[in-house]
Length: 136
Image (tube, rainbow, N blue to C red; front, side, top):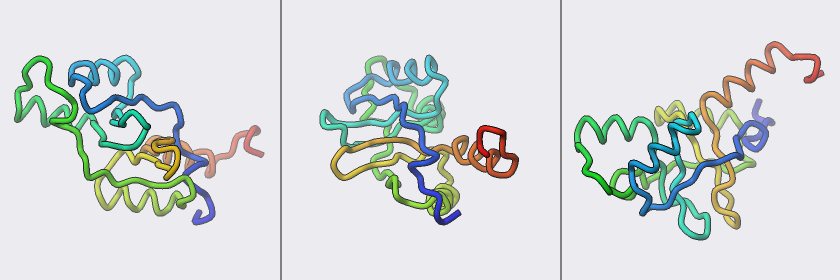
């Protein structure tokens, strides 16, 4: 599987917010799209951070956010990323090591280009172990 690259399994339909997006609005994006994270980007689509459902648990449990609090207050800024050319084994190893469920995929020129999730990896492994007629 070292020859299977992140680009093959990553999701490219991303939901992004900016650092000044309100936490309430970011949460609404996540709920409406049934996703576990939003990528925080600047105006040039460069990665600024990530906000996940785990962050929301911490927000509610510890911070009791006030209305109109921006994402920048709670987002993770020391984000571990992958490139589209990384192997899925390396991506999975990073996710296990850091106990992440979301790994943004970045490109030096384009910024954020995708996201690898534990669901993406599980779906890929499921197709590999039990190929469908379309896979053949």
